[in-house]
Image (cartoon, rainbow, N blue to C red; front, side, top):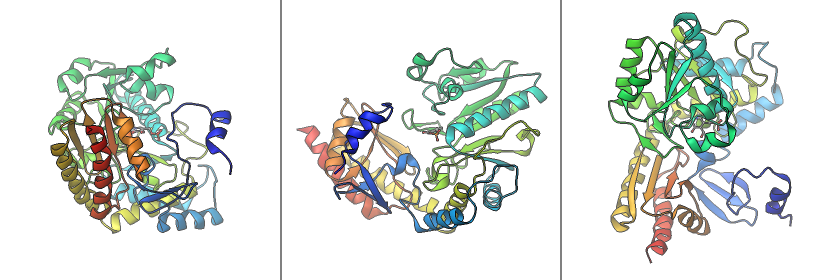
Length: 395
Ligand code: PLP
C-alpha cells in the first residue's frame, strides 16, 4: 500500500503539520481513512462542507455542469453564475456580486473596491482599518490586513494601507480614522483568530461611525456566512447592514468559490477594474447555487441555530465536569472550548483515535465547525468522544 505520508514529506511543500490520517472518502457528516476507519467530522473541510460530504444535490450539480460547460472566462454570459448572483442578491442586503475562487480573493476584491470608492468619493482615501486577531487570508495584502504579528514577520515589507487596531473597541477605530481612511473591515465574529465574539452593540457602533464619516463597512463573512452562526449571514445577528460583504467557505458546499458583494453605492468598479480567469466558473457556481438553494429550502440555517445551542449546552456541561475548560464560546456551529493549559493537540489526537475530527484553534483551544446538517445524535456522539478524551487529560 502506498505510504501517502511519505509522499507528502518528499514532494509537498511543508507548510502545515498534518494529522496522521489519509482521508479517502466522505459522506454526510462522516469521513473514512485509507485503512477504512470511520470518523465523525466536526471540522467539515474547515467550516466549508455545510451540507456535509458529497451531498447528492451538490455532487449532481457538479457532475451535470462538468458534462455541459466547464470554463469560459468572464468574457461570456454563463447561466450558473448569473443564477447564483440573483439568488445571493435576493437573499441578502447587497445589490451586486462578483464571483471569484476563494476567501482571500474575495477580500482582495473588497479592498480594491473600497480603494476605488475612495479614489472616486473620498479624495483618494485608501487606508482600511482592521482589527487585532482578525484573519482575512494569506495573500500579501490580506496578510497585512490580518491583525496577527506572527503572520507578518517573515514576509515584510507588506503592502501598505492597513491599520490594525484593537478588536471590539470602537474608540480604537475612531482614533485610527483619518482623511486617508476609505473603509473598516471586520469579521462579525473573529473565527481563526480565536472565535472572539463581538459585543452586542459593537457592530452597530462601527456602522454608525462609518456612516458619520461616509466611509465603507466591509464585513468578511467568509467563515460566518451561509448559516454558520444560525443566521444566513452574520450581519443579521448584529442587526446591521454592511456596504461590502465577502463569502467563500460554505458557499460552494465543498467546491472552491468566493463571492464579493456590494451595495449599489459601493459597487463602483468600472470596466477593466477587476477580472479573474476562473471568475464565475460554471461548475463551482452551479455547486454554489445548488448549495444555497438547498440551504434556503430546507431551513439548514435554523438547524445550525438549534443544534448549535444543543452542542453549546453539552460543552457547558463538560465545562462543569472538567474545571480545566476555562471557556466555551461561539454562536451557531462556530464554537470553541478553551483550556487553561496547552492541551489542544492532545485532546485532538485522543478524539482522532476515537473517531472524531476536531480543529486545534490555538495551543490551548479546540474549535468545532461541523456541517450544518448535523443532528442531536451526532452531537451526543461527538460529546461522548470528547468527554472520553478530556477524562484522560484530567488524570
Ligand atoms: N476570511 C476569513 C474570515 C477566514 O476565516 C478565511 C479562512 O479561514 C479567509 C478569509 C481566507 O479564505 P481562503 O482560505 O478561502 O482564502
